Image 1: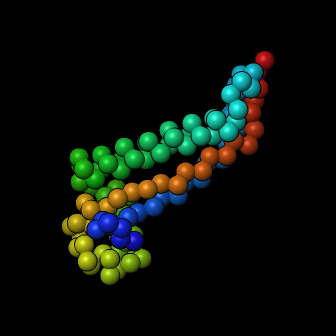
Image 2: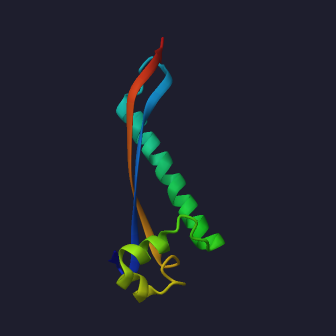
Image 3: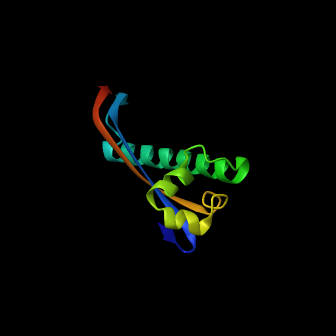
Length: 103
C-alpha cells in the first residue's frame, strides 16, 4: 500500500519454540518473548536497510511481490523506484511454549 508518498511493506513473522537452560525463572517468559521480538525486529530492519540503501538489491523480491499484488502502485512508482521508495514495518510474534528450568 502507499503511505506518505512511499510504498509501505508489512512483514509478518511468527516464531514459536522452547527456551533451554532457563535459569531460576527470574525473568518472566513474557519479558523473554519481548526481548526476542526486539532482537528479530532489529535484525530485519538492519538487513532491509542494508540491502535497500547500501547494496540497492531487493533480495526478498518485495518489488516483484508489489507488482503481482498491486500493479497500479507498482506502475506509479516504477520498476526502479518501488524498492528504493519502500518503507518497512514488521509484526513480530514470539511464543515461548516451554522452558527447561535449571535451579
